[in-house]
Length: 137
Image (cartoon, rainbow, N blue to C red; front, side, top):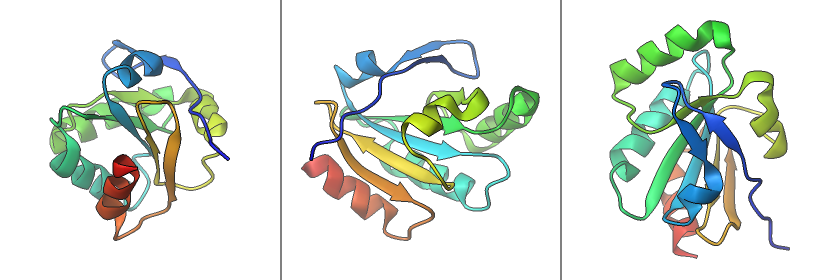
């Protein structure tokens, strides 16, 4: 059974609008669900940045479960780690709910065709390998 992505439009932490459908017209997408209080989330985002940031075929979108009150902490972390990809605050966990996120970190790989190729729940040492396999499908 093919799972299709659930489209969303959201503002990133800098006020820019992120439209998932528009991104998918150009690139595959790696959604990374995380939070500032999550033990392995920053390590995972660092790996994604190092391996995938700047690639022509892939866009990373980080979706933080921090609340609006935690916005300054999210911005500080992003600046400290050099995360220059879109970071969205998922206030009320609406996007997380639509993707069935039950634990952090969770990564969802979406092909340009809109198909969810892979969902990786929890910290996984094979993360990069699993994402590459999903992108190659």
